[in-house]
Length: 201
Image 1 (cartoon, rainbow, N blue to C red):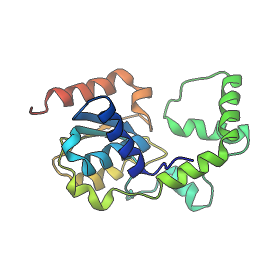
Image 2: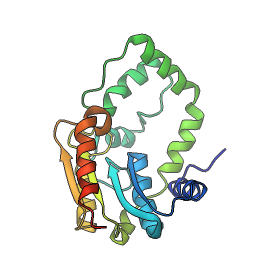
Image 3: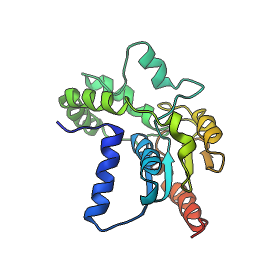
Image 4: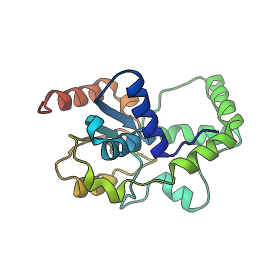
């Protein structure tokens, strides 16, 4: 029953920070979380020390991703009603998706299928917001990380982000898909740590 729009989720971050007595924070997120990280930095600049969107949603990429091509044909890979649907979706999430036993994949698929109505509502809510027209307002130190083999959100979107926020640091990770922090955790962490270490206090 909750509002899963990017604005509502950003507001929850601010409320969480209030509850924890945190005035300002470094915000990092992947995919939908990356969209939230950017939106938060734009709309709560006084609460943002830095932002680091990782393969974020929120803009229209010059080149369509595999997912976007599927959506254009009326097929949402996030929404499926069979285990086979999940087995097709899972490899799209990463270039080198970790091997999982079949019974684990089936269990995760069954959970997704049971929540299809909720997932549909959430996908619709998060897709209703864009940061594309507001990116020029992004003033916090920003690191954009993207896997160059992302099948869900095409790496060409980095051009849109860079054009609007020229001071942004961009790191494109070769051979990586949609979730760098899972596919190359140590490398991704090192990139982020280096970014934080070089932010001017």
